[in-house]
Amino acid sequence: GGSDATQSDLLRARMRLSLQEHLWEFYRNNVNIPTDEQTTARRAALDICAELRVFLHAKLPDMPLREMYLSGSLYDELQVVTADHAQLMVPLVLEKNLWSFIPGEDTIMNVPGFWLVRRENLEYFPRNSSYWDRCMVGGYLSPKSVLEVFDKLVAGSINWPAIGSVLDYVIRPVVPSETLTLEVQYETDRKLYVDFLPLLVMEDGTSLIAKPHRLAAERHENLWRQSFRVPETARLRALDQEDGGCRCACLKVAKAMCKLNPALNRLNASQLTNAILLLSEKEGDWTLEALADRFLQLLRALVGHLEAGRLPCALNPKVNLFCELTEQEVDELGYTLYCALSDPEELLRT
Ligand code: GDP
Image (cartoon, rainbow, N blue to C red):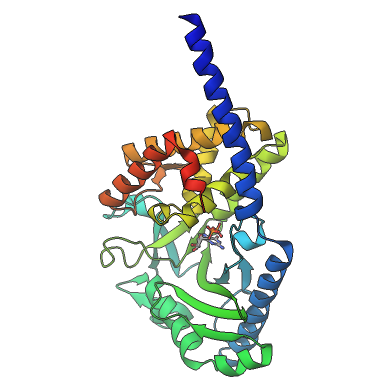
């Protein structure tokens, strides 16, 4: 009868309370990175970036690039567990009249969130009118070929041991790597991975990055990936600022959980960010006291999205942020998270 309901309500309330404490403890002990560790990592990344700028200016003065810059979670207080990676953004300059951008949904591949960059006006401006024509494959600018240009330079012709010894780091290109990555050992027990990320910015501000589609590599080889990172992160932060909310804290806890559990490694920051943005459209209470409730709700929402095989991007619902997972990966993620619903603390154990 009535007293049973009250009993189980009480029990549930107590479980939530302890999960709440547990989450904040996990946040303090595992998620959060000490300030000095972040500072040292940022300095190492900056030193490398400065060296690369000097090298590229000297070696390839006519390569049309805008200034390279560092970005990623290390730069907006969203990195978790260890300060161990950053992206070096390398914006390419494309001639407006020579290149056009075709959204993935308008191509035979039909993949929203990816784009083709087509070379135009070849009859009036023949091959090599644009510096980037050297990276043209079948009439399109190939992100793979752009990466290869930088790979040859960065991995092939820079004397990293010499630069490393001046900076007092051990620097080496990571091979093989899907993108171009430098490993920087900046203290005896600390390593930083810096990803080289060529970037195109369209006139309306849309950003495309040279990060290959994971599946069906050959068919998708010429696709550029639209990056939503800047606007999605900004939206999350703005929502938190409006109501003093815990969305960023919730994101960081979820990121750490995925980083520390091999079964969840496939879930990335963008998927988690968008799941929280979607949840924010339905759920208003993001006060610090509601962290446990929202965290459980996030897990439940992710299970639901995985069951549907679809996680729409909050900034463009046509984009399915699960489109690069295999069916088996979707099943495994769903299973792991489903099990976690009854014992969420298991995933926070370290
Ligand atoms: P974290 O690596 O989980 O801490 O997440 P981040 O928020 O730092 O995201 C980094 C990942 O997003 C990398 O895999 C990047 O390749 C990818 N990414 C996509 N767009 C961008 C972008 O505009 N900037 C950066 N830094 N990374 C991006």
